[in-house]
Image (cartoon, rainbow, N blue to C red; front, side, top):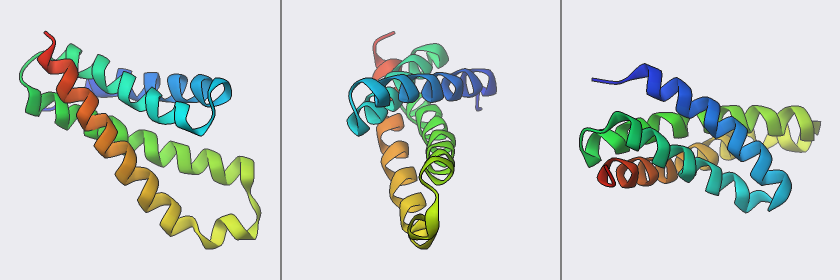
Amino acid sequence: MVNWKAVIIGFILTVIFTSILNQVIGSFGSYIGVITAGIIVGYMVNYNWMNGAIHGGLIGILGGIVAVIIVLIVGGGPYIMESFGVLLLVEIIADVILGAVGGAFGAMIT
């Protein structure tokens, strides 16, 4: 069963971490933010590595959608709109994988 409280907290942490780390480190910082939030959520659900991976993947999906929306708002322009589908797909896949890995790791450290 999904712990939605942990997912919402993880989503908020993902947005905060990726926003801060993206400004400090660059685009690589957003991936570190997703992994870090995934570890925290995996630790919060505290069941097994698969449950942590599921919760990490959920925050990856939500975080990826928000990241693409932010890129569209900040970047804007017709070029971004043309590549919206590819951008959305790649960002969400990357964030789901990284969130799931972080969530599994966070669940295993408890």
